Amino acid sequence: MSRGYSLIECLIVIICGAILLTVAVPNIQAFQQTWALWGGVKLVETSLYWGRMHAISSNSSMMFEVAGNGHEFWWTDPISGLHFAGSVRRLDRVRIVSAPKHPLRFYQHGNAVPAGTYTIQGDIGSFSVIVSPGGRIRVQKN
Image (cartoon, rainbow, N blue to C red):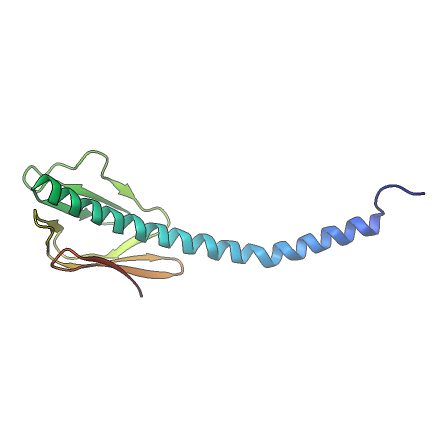
């Protein structure tokens, strides 16, 4: 009675594993790109919700600013011009490719001026985060 595996059986298992890896790796990369894009979109969306709620609860206004390269954004106090501590966010694998010409500003009642669209683009596509004049925020696939 022989114990263990023969060389042929081990080679068959290794070849089957290699075939599975060659099929899975492109799918894993597409999955990572999809989640990087979706994560960036949700980060922008939740940050906008936070700024709107902060403006309402503090009875003051808030400004949402995007860096020129589109990889960072933050909240600013429009009166003093200072960034809110901890509000700077970085987008690593995606970036904001279009934004309103002037920084978005939420007021005490939750309305937004200027209303506009933020387009977040990644390797596999883009999404738009749309802010209406009434302060409604929604996400749309492009």
